[in-house]
Image (cartoon, rainbow, N blue to C red; front, side):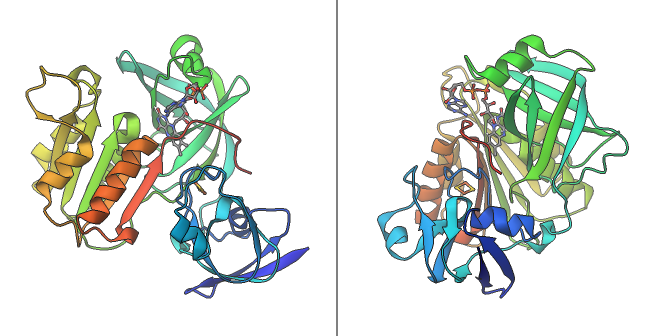
Length: 333
Ligand SMILES: Cc1cc2nc3c(=O)[nH]c(=O)nc-3n(C[C@H](O)[C@H](O)[C@H](O)COP(=O)(O)OP(=O)(O)OC[C@H]3O[C@@H](n4cnc5c(N)ncnc54)[C@H](O)[C@@H]3O)c2cc1C
Ligand code: FES
């Protein structure tokens, strides 16, 4: 059985079957709602039920009691039980981008520091794989599938780049760090997520933890290529100086007057630069964050603590966009 879902305020409509999530139903009809993990863990897909009945369980306790009481749900794990009116953001920018499964080969694999791999994948010239800078893909090898943000602004020479941190004991980490060979065949599916730079004019703050730099690299490279002169403030957090696997952010800051870059190291007494937690550096530099837009990527703990602190320092809720590098649970449909 299908129910009509009307999005507010856009008044865009789609049909949702009772056995599929609202996010899956919208995606199937080429209507892209705000989302990231697709598994009920990150909170990116929050939406408010204005009218109608749903089946929803907040299994990972993502929502506050106030949000639950006011009808907020996570569209990736919510099903329609009646016709609905839903207050939800919808992204026409992504409507023309088709999700697909594409075979790809290992074109290059480098380890700029021991626990980070920079993997370049070669796609078939006929693949016509499209994405917006900042989005992620699901990569499959040897029966294991994990999500990775694309670190390049587009497909260059039929290739795209990923930055993969080694998780001790991790299944995919073991494949990437111990087994991958040049020209090995893999499979990717995507693009996924709504982490991309919105069309607006506000100053941009990019907050990255570890390999959370990957989508930031893609987004900033795209802004530079398009001659976008919005002020850009990059804050990249690492545990130690030896973990800083790229000097690109510093190079951009040297080459472009509107870009500033701050490497913030939390756990290394020998580091001569900025020390502490990466979001604290933003709070020190911006007495009031009203009027800025933040794009944050990295661990869910970093994102949660940064969001709470930034909202207290004047940032508007809708000006905080994030992609959390959550451990894999079940894959999205
Ligand atoms: C939207 C999205 C984008 C992502 N993009 C990137 C990216 O660009 N670069 C990148 O390096 N990673 C990224 N990740 C994380 C990535 O998908 C994998 O979770 C990670 O590489 C670990 O996979 P694994 O198979 O090696 O470990 P697994 O075998 O899945 O896990 C091994 C153990 O480590 C724990 N674990 C796994 N990941 C984490 C974590 N992040 N924090 C704490 N504990 C963990 C697991 O719970 C498990 O106990 C992203 C995740 C998501 C959801
Ligand atoms: S909680 Fe729904 S996309 Fe992450």
